[in-house]
Amino acid sequence: MADLPLHDQGDFADADRGFIAKLSPAVVRTADGRVVWDGDSYDFLQEDCPETAHPGLWRQSRLCARQGLYEVTSGVYQVRGLDLSNMTLVEGDRGVVVIDPLISTECAAAALKLYRAHRGDRPVTGVIYTHTHVDHFGGVRGVTDGGVPILAPAGFLEHAASERVYAGHAMTRRAVYLYGRALPRSPEGQIGCGLGMTASTGTVSLIPPTLDLTRTGQEETVDGIRMIFHLTPGAQAPAEMNLLLPDHRALCLAENATHNQHNLLSLRGAAVRDARAWARYLTEAVSLFADRADVAFASHHWPTWGGEAIVRFLEQQRDMYAYLHDQTLRLINKGLTGPEIAEAMTMPPQLEQAWHTHGYHGSVSHNVRAVYQRYLGWFDGNPAHLWEHPPRESAIRYVECLGGAAGVVEFARRYIGENDLRFAAQLLNHAVFADEGNKEARDLLAEVYTRLGHGAENATWRNFYLMGALELGDGIVPATMDVTSPDLLAALSVEQIFDSIAIRVDGPRAWHERLAIDWHLTDLGERHRTTLSNGVLVQQRDPRAAAADLTLRLTKEQLVGLLAGKGVEGVEREGNTAALQRLVAVLDRPVPDFAIVTA
Ligand SMILES: [Zn+2]
Image: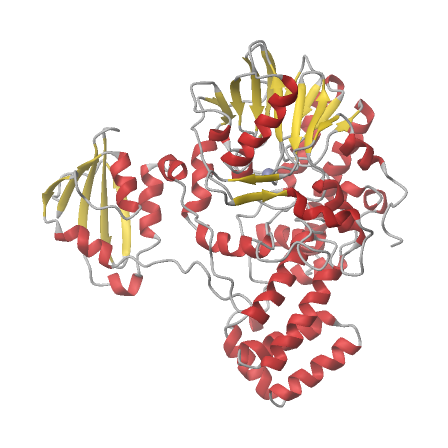
């Protein structure tokens, strides 16, 4: 691989630096014995890179699979490789402050236990959530029951909860593909996701922050540890922050600079991120902190030591996002469309020579389309694309025009022979969408996806291709993930709760319903009205006069209970109770395991 900087082995030294101890065996279970994390399942990565993996990705996965307790600098420790993310521990006067307590309480507890085994039984005296993604807060109850300061960037709670309100079920389904959840962990199967190995599958919790950070430069002290915050909203996450530990000369970069090119748009689906803001925050981080830090660490991957190396790392990360942003817009303004820009975009060779700019999690190809999407959206301006048939209807017609399914498969074999796997996948996808019973087309498409996956530098592309191949062979993998977490439900605002009901209204079924329900939240002292008309559930705070069909007096906890399918017992009702039943009758259910690679 001429394009890989194979001479540069520095990351291996950094990934091993400060190593104290492993968790052995690296298996974490729930109280009833279910495995939620198995680091040992990746031991095969010690072998040389096989034909079935991209050498760059294999190398990245080897680095990510390292696990254990590490000293970052005196008084600052990290547990890495016991979940998708890192847990950082900063020792204070009385105990230890935890930065980003992983996804699952079980993993967080195991990480804390490993730390304590080597650093003493220090109490957790504070928690920092760097941002709103679940791999940075979900394990919190594994390290504390609360009663300690919990610091987070302003807007944290709203955004942490909201990601699950709107498109959460679809994201959860697509995350099965993103992480390759159903794939065997093997040289032919799942070998990580670039940002780490995979997401743990234990208990997700959330304790609301006790202090919101609202401005860059804000300084706080927790357990004697001084911290200076740098807010970075709207880039990698809607609410996020870096922080400097000035007395340790250590800089926490949250997830704003990691050892890969990150996503401007996750393939599981998300609101598109702002590369321009991201680049600017990295410039700010350099000017604010670079001369005050001897080590920079993040909540994924390994730290970077030395002032010069930190600046180089941050500037290269910055240039990468700025280049993607600016060059995509340059080409947009010359009339190129998303797929054309993805094909045309080449990163500067100086950046390509740094491992951490490579697309193990995000990719140049899908990130430039994200920039296109942010500025121009789904339509490329070509009227032929305004009113296309949906995929299955298109597929039936393409197959007919190509002389039937057998002909399509024949053509596909020709393109496979020419190693044009991309077009073979397009052709075979038509054949499968036109007739999902076409076993020959399915098998051949699975073979093509497998080869595309094995060749992919990007771990999430690999996982998507291999999951596609798996489901073409075995059918849809049933959803086993429980997406509800009592803590996350409780964190929803009343407005978010009504939003989550509104998006379940089956429009056509509700076309002719008209009803109004008043909700008096007794514990919050809030009054809300929901009105169903024209197939829409509209919510309104502090409604004026006009009587509702039904008034319910309840606590927020009871409202959450109603949402989770509990009854109305204990809820004070006034008016026509049937109104609530009529509302419930028009609510639809999400499909947790919808088809992706078949129609
Ligand atoms: Zn993360």
